[in-house]
Length: 175
Image (tube, rainbow, N blue to C red; front, side, top):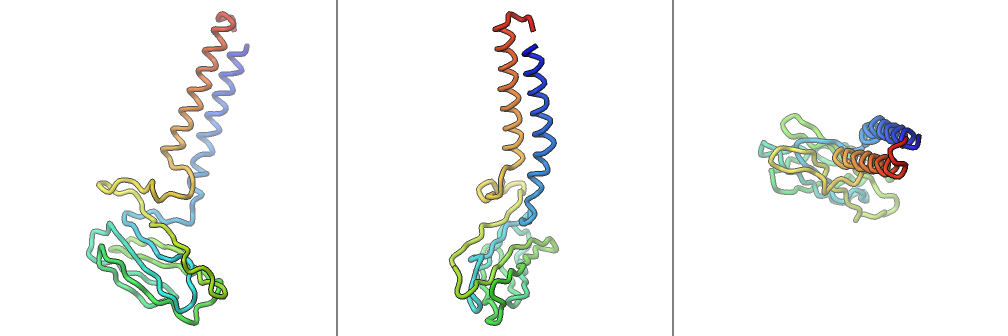
């Protein structure tokens, strides 16, 4: 009887993880996954401050960066660029910075500091997966990836399976 309860618990746990893991992983709506990487540094800046813009992995030699808070900047691949935030930018507002690589667009937020703020806050590169470039696992600070979720499910299933085997051995197979 214990083996049936353990097997039921294992199955229920596996179903719960499989059902809810994709929802949890998809909830990361504040990041863009693109075939090229990009970043805005710092992520919070005072009006009139200068931000550094970078991109990598774009197959064309230039990336266009636009925003409602500074003039359009064209980045030459592999070289960072800079932009000066408008002095009349609204304190506390968040602006969307758009990076355009041959029509593929990615965005990053830029927050305008209240009363001087902390212009040293940085945002990491937001980079998707591209063959030949590896993964962006080092830049993922938003939770579990698919690999980690699948590994977790397999570990849970293995532990529950071992519990069933041990329970059967203790009862002499009379479950």
